[in-house]
Amino acid sequence: MIRFENVAMRYDGGPEILRDVSFELEPGSLTFLTGPSGAGKTTLLKLVFLSERPVRGAISMFGKDVARLRRGELPALRRQIGVVFQDFRLLDHLTAFENVALPLRIQGMPERAYREDVEEILNWVGLGERMHARPATLSGGEKQRIAIARAVVARPPVLVADEPTGSIDPEMGARLMRLFVELNKLGTTVLIATHDRSLVDNAKARELRLFAGRISQAGGSRWS
Amino acid sequence: MELNEAARPARPTPLFPRRGGGEGALFGVMAIMSFLACLTLALALGAARLAETWERGLTGQATVQILETPGIALEVQVTAALEVLNATPGIASARVMSAAESAELLKPWLGDADLSAVPVPALIAVTLDPARPLDADALRARLSAAAPGASFDDHSRWNAGLTAASSAIGWGAYAILALIALAASASVVFAARAALQAHRDVVDVLHMTGARAAFIAREVQWRFFMLGGWAGLAGLAGAAALAGAALLAADGPEAAFLPMLAPPWRDLVWLAAVPAAAAAIAMTTARLAVSGFLARTA
Ligand SMILES: Nc1ncnc2c1ncn2[C@@H]1O[C@H](COP(=O)(O)OP(=O)(O)OP(=O)(O)O)[C@@H](O)[C@H]1O
Ligand SMILES: [Mg+2]
Image 1 (cartoon, rainbow over the protein chains, first blue to last red):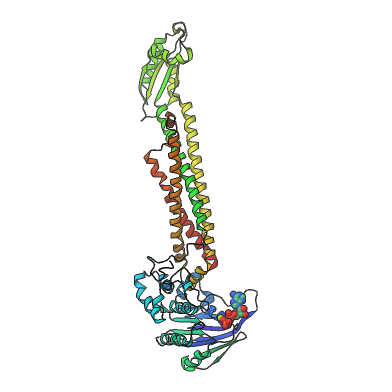
Image 2 (image 1 turned 90 degrees about the vertical axis):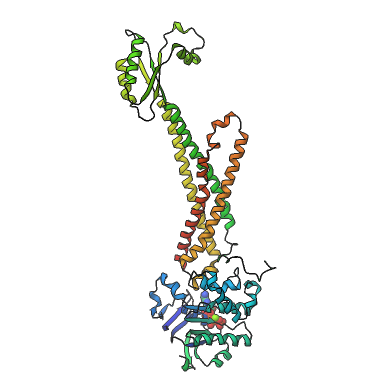
């Protein structure tokens, strides 16, 4: 489904952040991406959700070579990938409800068509009471849960989450992890970048370790 | 907003926040442009109306003047000239003016002098047929053959000058309108780019969520449509206020000489096109600017 071959990445003019990165995510797999802060986890995820392009190597997504994508093909491809950003990236002037509804709204759906779905997922992440609050009035953990709800609301076949439990207490973290596992069981391909060892150990999933810009693999072959 | 922050907004919040895009400045610029456009358009319409008035008022009439020529009696010349005039297509009627009428016409120049002492030319008043064009040169040739002392004056020298002047004013006004539209478009381009630049974060999130450029352009273009329309109405209101004030100030008979200040209702319809044009210009230009911006940054 997603395939990296000898991928290297650098931000313009800077040092190489990733080098020689090769791995493949099978459809329906659950994979963790771990590594120390600054190892390049977020950078690797940016390549996955097509926000950055590699300087070397090949990335293919859904069987398509990313380097050969035309601009017009990007939106359709990005709609296949739900993203939880490490810094949330909520739109501050929209309510929680509207932030979560965004992926459906940009597909041209009218509000009455998605209201129930959005309210359901907001209830699931424990924010049913605060759905019309704006991000500025929410706690870090609440914002994170909004970001997660937005990433999954359109049921994309691929879910990419960058530190999705970083601002959340262990109990809520476990609950959200159950959401990811549940979606994964329903067929979603899930890739989660995290420092949280307990998350990785409990899920017994495959783990890609990033260190000094290179990948090594460990564990959980039953998921891949 | 703080009080009922948990209430659902009446309708979906626009994806681009209202504040921070420099839209107040654009509103001011667009309102001023619309104000100027209204005045210029009124000038163009007024010039067209003046030209029409002159055309109708002056070309409807012409005169033939017949001077005493040695050897031929004046009456003979008059009869010959009338015959030629009545046989000419494009002339509705021709009538010999009485001596009293001619004297009345000459009075401003000659005063109360005794006219019986000077040779007074005979005058024939000619009414032209507005439906049929007159070949003035051919008529002159035939007139001077029949009556050597006759000369035909259709006021066309006057008329041509006035018509040329008013049509020059008209074209000049339309050129100014085009320039105003161009300047308005340019300011919309800058404002649309600035708005996207200021809301870069929103654009990024929309991209990452899979929004198409056309969707983003549509979000932006309606904002500019509304902004342009309201600014256009503000400009129109300003122009109307100015026209009203001018009419009040000039309510004497001289107001009749300012047809531009008293436009008929037909022209007001055209002025109402200014806000519509402002909205359309703002919308299409914003759309183009956004598409261009996204093509360079996506
Ligand atoms: N936009 C950028 N421009 C230049 N350098 C960047 C940029 N983003 C990240 N970097 C650099 O790339 C390296 C990897 O950053 P990245 O964010 O991928 O790390 P990370 O593994 O996600 O870290 P963390 O666990 O702290 O989130 C860092 O050294 C960082 O300074
Ligand atoms: Mg990171």
